[in-house]
Length: 542
Image (cartoon, rainbow, N blue to C red; front, side, top):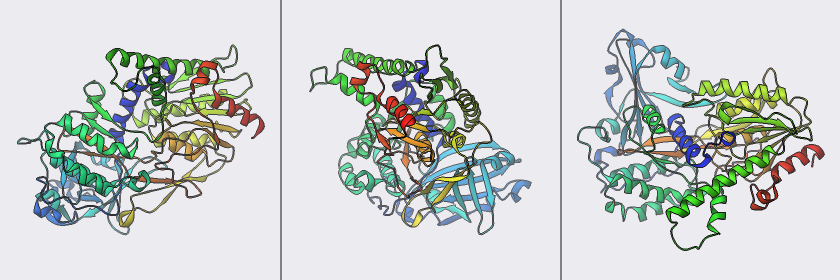
C-alpha cells in the first residue's frame, strides 16, 4: 500500500470495498419498516406474510443417513434478514443463503459439497434454550445467530425473485428499487444519526424510477439515494454475479469491469488533495481528460510527498522495516520514539488474502516490530491511512498493548424489537511482545471500519492517546445484500460503544488531541504536524 507505491486511491479502495462484500455478512433491523407500495411488480399480494410463516416441512431437506444432523433445516436471523437452508445428499451438505425482507426473498448465495466438518468450522450448534446456529467469527467476536424454523418461510416459497442468472429473468428497475429501499428501511440503523428521512427518499424516488432503462442507470440512481447518508459502509457494487457470491467477487478483483460507489462522512486524504487541485483551475465546468490526469498526478504526488516526509523522521542510518506487502512498517526516530505504520487490517499477502493468512502474517509482523522497538521511550502507531479490513486482526494487535484482561468496547446489532443484546468484547493480553510504554495513535478521516475498531479498543488502555482528526464514523460491519440484477449493496447495521457508552457511528472517534492531517502547509514545509504532536505528547505527557 502506502509503502509499496501502490495507487492508494484507485486500487486500494476498490479492492477494499469488494472485500467488504466478500467477508462481512452481518446486519440488523430498523424500528419502523415501511410497507412496499402495492403497485410494485416486485411484491405479490401474498407476500405480506411474515418470514416466520410456514409452507414446507424441513424434513424434506434430508435425503440420506445424515438426516439426523442437527444442522439440517431452515434457520432464520431476524435482525439480519437472512434465512439459511441446509440440506444433505450423499453425505455432502448444501447451504443456501436467502436475503429476505417483509415482502421479498432472493436466493443470494449457494455453497455446495460441504462436509459436516466444514459446517462445524463455520457454525456452532446449540439446543440449550432453543435450537440456534451461531456463525463463528473468531476468538473475540460473535457472529450472526440463527434460530431454527420448523418450515420454509412463505415469502421465499411464494415470492422468490428471479435473479439475473435465472432463466426467464427480465430486468425490472422498479422491483430492484423496492427491494433496495425496503432492505435499508428494515436493516439500516443510522437514518437518524445521518439526518435522512428514508420515507421522504422513497416518495421522491418512486416518481422517477420508472424512467430507468438499464442496470447502469439503476446503479447511478441508487447511488444518489444513499449519497446523503455519507456512510462509507453504505456501498454499491456492480459486478457479474453467479450463484456463489464469494467466487463472483474474487473474479471481479481480477477485472477492471466493476462499478463501485461509497461516500465518506469525513474528508478523506483523496478529497483534500483533489480539492486543492480544483482550487488551481477554473471552476464551474467539468474536468477535461487532461485535467483528470493532472488531478490524479497531483494526488499521487501529494501521497508520495507525505511518505517521504514520514520516512524523514527515521533515525539516520536506521533501518525502515517493511512487512505484509507494505501494509506494516516501522522505524525509530532520532528521539528514540518508535513509529509503527499499519496501513490496513487485511491484504497482507500477494494476491487474494484470507483471514487466516492475515492473522498469521499480521501477528508475525507486530511481534517483530515490537521486539525491534522494545527499547524505545514510546510508540506512535499511524492509522491515518488505514482503510480497515478484519476486526479479528485489529483486536489481535490491541492485545500486544494490554497488561490484563478487560472490556475494550461493547457491540449490538439492530434497534427496536429486533435489537440484539449489547455484548461486551473482552480481550486478553498476548503472552509475549507486550508494549506498555506511552503510545500515541494517529487517526484521520481515512481511518475507517476495522481501523476504527482498533482505535476504539486500544483507546480504552491507560497508556494510549488518540491524536489527529475524527475517524470516518463507519465502525459497523457491512451487511451484504444483492438485487435481482448484478448489483450488490452494503448496509451499516451495528452499534459500537466505548466503555463510557458513547456511540461513534456516523460521527467518528474524536481524538484526545486534535491535529489537522496532510495540510498543504505541512507538505510544503516538510513536516508532519500529527507525528510531531504525538512525539511531544510521549515526551511530556501533555
